[in-house]
Length: 577
Image (cartoon, rainbow, N blue to C red; front, side):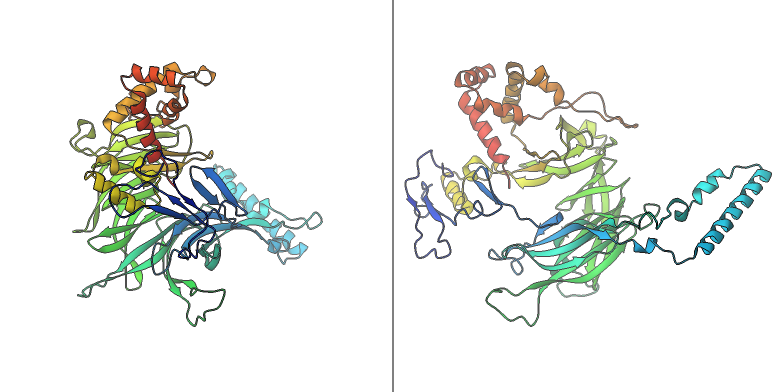
């Protein structure tokens, strides 16, 4: 049914396009029921189903059509360039960090340029030196074996016999930064190749303010493509890894002549600045907006640094030292949610007055964090944490709570065993069922506000959830619920876990219980918070016969219609692209 309307059949359908829609000759029009008194009759124009009938088109269901784009490489990171001067509806631009495997020749190992007599002389000298050290060790009364282990050289372990074969080529991984035009179709406009043994680990499209000290002029903002890398030495991990921050600007190529096949001026990436970070590999790059000044926040090793753009280079203006390894940084306003790879979550705040990062609270449980995210409903906000034992934990910053230890500890509100591993939790706006099927979001919201002045002001209309993909190929969402809906679905979950048959007679409740960590130093108490509704279970209510639905609804003191409405809102809020 149309957004905000009743379940009615389509009263009008037109397969031939009017002359006004010249660019949609293969599309069609649908007629919607009008909502309120805003405007005239609502029509929706579809440009066709070209994505479905493309060579790599997919129709997964739910009103979506997807087209698979084979790139021939491994896409590590992808970001849309959300700038009107760069990307338009007719030419969307993306920046990618990709990797590809190439064969590296090792012909230099076949011959070292020495004659057989010279090689034998070098071996004899090394053996003589070792024998002399062993004699000195025997006379001195200490063991020389450990020193021998440390002095093993490559020539002692690897020797190529030319009669058996030559050194085979080695597979190496090359990283590149691509600028891609999605309109023609997904052609590479420009590329930048990273250095040898350099890995692309972070990507962000952001604005930076060009700050000029002791100047009264209004600082200007510029669009940059920031790339974070990790440089591993060719000798392995004996030397600590370093990172680089690369800042690219996008500009139109000069001396461009329009042609028939090229309607838009081509773009190119220009490397404006690079900075070597000796603290460790770059794991996170995010933008920070504070008092009309845009900066970039860098997570490298165990350090979080605030970098300011000015004078054609990045300058550090603030820092925070984490415990082990910065996994991810999430920013809302001037607050930071920092996830440590081995030391759970940290909640920080940036103070512009003294340019400092201050720790407000943290979780003292030694948890290996794989992903972290934010969920909110109205004025309440919570932090979601996914750990190595496939658990989800929900924390809140509550300084007045007794469990917060004077405000220094994040309070755990709920926990849940997901049973799958994920590496990212992305926030999105949870839509209501009235907006879910609308193709014209702005007009639908205007019509609904005419009918209900409180629409959009309720807490359920201001709800941000997180979605995630797992390593086993599944997709899920975490949605904050109102208290009446939560207690109703919790009661339904309890009843359904007893009433319905489970696979292999296993306990559904025990499967969703929090799995404790086996690491030393764990300080979490034995009680589990629970507090999460399993939608995989309660959504089975929709497929049950009507008689069973009525029995289950009456057992929790509710009705089938009310439960179905809650599940409908839950399903719409959990859908995201």
